[in-house]
Image 1 (cartoon, helix red, strand yellow):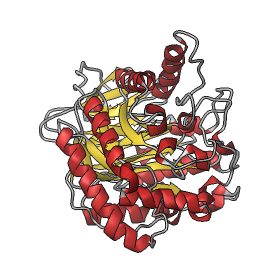
Image 2 (cartoon, rainbow, N blue to C red):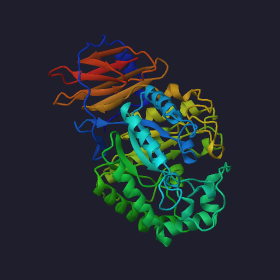
Image 3 (spheres, rainbow, N blue to C red):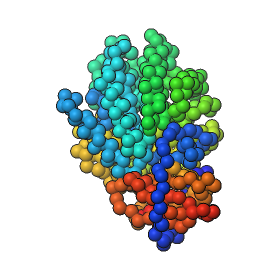
Image 4 (spheres, rainbow, N blue to C red):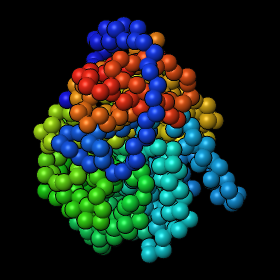
Length: 469
């Protein structure tokens, strides 16, 4: 287990480490970024350090035209680049290390056989800009209730026969999965490859993977967001259709490049907290389910025991022997418990053997897709109280074992104690640049660089302790 901290030890650990002497300073080279790989239930980098992913989804606004997680004017030269820089600079200032980036097939190929080069260029610019700021990215083919004509997003309208006009005015859009027979039949056609739609989808993914493989910062591909069974029986479909589909997609994508493959469960299972998807026994797979509290979705208070909610996903990852990254965790921003819900999720990530999570979501836009307000910033760009919870230190690349991490939200104090690896590799602790931090340490020296504290163990020490407050 990488992390064993829990709420019960926050006071003890922060109290013990609050008195750490000022950290000695030294010069430490920031390790070169490479690809990540799955090593059992952990994510590891090229130096075999355990990597934790903490980030946001980019984002709900990217589901519809002009398909970016922020408002911009396509007719104004340079406007996209300027808005993109501001968007990414802010994300990087939070100290996060990953973006799950919404990719729309509708945007990429609005007319069959005619890719939109401008959209692809903008998408790649987002990936490149994230990498330049030290952020990993996950390429997420995003769909909700199949396509825009059904109040959703993702699949192109040309994969449908005589579809209605696109719209996004459905606050209860998720009910379309079970209430709209056209949506169900669209998924039936996809899984059965009626009309060759799945064949065309795989060709899209092949081209996309070839374009993004080797791109700096891109650590993985997510074949499909929240897949749906259509009219099939869920349990049968997961075993007979979804699992073989994921195995085939993982093989195809991994044949193109070594990126990880993130596999999602259904949207309903993200609310229930369990899945019938069987172990895929496929190389390079990361289990990437979602976690939404059903009571919170309707304005009620979410369960305070987030750790119990996420534990089954950690257990399933252990059964499969794969890393688990929660692809989406979120709550409507107008819920009075929104900030504390994010805080509880981050504490649970400290405590559980999970490899990370991405908050849903981060958009800067006056337009709200289907009236949803989940963004960590308001439509006018002002930040919600959730930002203060997200922007805190964590061990983003740990060179060692036995780590105990804790966060005191009142004192805004992060502590970590761990046994350093024998090779003396540095550990990287995220340090949000939007604030000024004091660093204490025993058994190591540190080097502060933009957004990160590098920790170099002293020769021969068996334990390192660091505090950031």
